[in-house]
Image 1: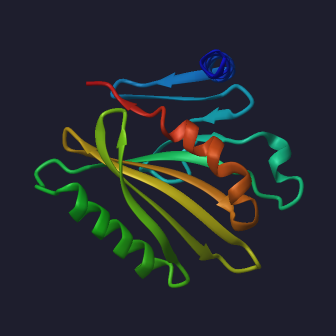
Image 2 (image 1 turned 135 degrees about the vertical axis):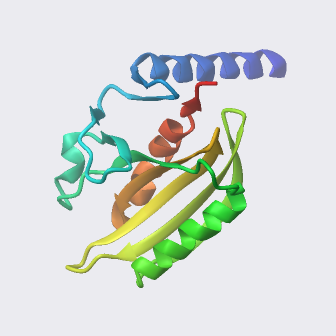
Amino acid sequence: MGNKLLMLSALFFSLILFGQKDNWKTFEKDSYSIQYPKSWTYSDQKPQPMVQFVLLSEEDSQEEDEFRENINLSTESLQGRKMTLDAYVELALGQVTEQIPSAKILATEDVSLNGKKAKSFIWTADFGNGVMLKFKQYILISDGTAYILTFTSTEAEFDEYVNKATDILDTFKINS
């Protein structure tokens, strides 16, 4: 009886997870791909030259705080530079804390992103005017390019969106 209940539960959760991915879109470029919910919006508008794309959460996510949670991908060519992932992350975290004095690194961890070694870290910063943002970033290096995936949210809504954002971040693949 216990095994049947366990099997039915596993099947039920598998169907839920499978159904969720059915409602997702895939953005694919020459060297990478990422999936995201259909309720999110893809934009190739580049707020900075290194940014490759931005995924925006549902429009109603900004009703309470006038901020729309988002994920973006930045890339940096490392051609000609021998840099390990650890060294790159140390440099990136140093730049964050140097350029944004209010930044606080809350957590860092080694992760695997579709078979690629990556680092994940979470940090916050006060950008003035009462706007406290919280970030979850993944950094990986592949074929001489650093890929920096960033989920950005208000600190107040971070916990509400971080699981969905992590699901999206975890779909990122380097096309080898």
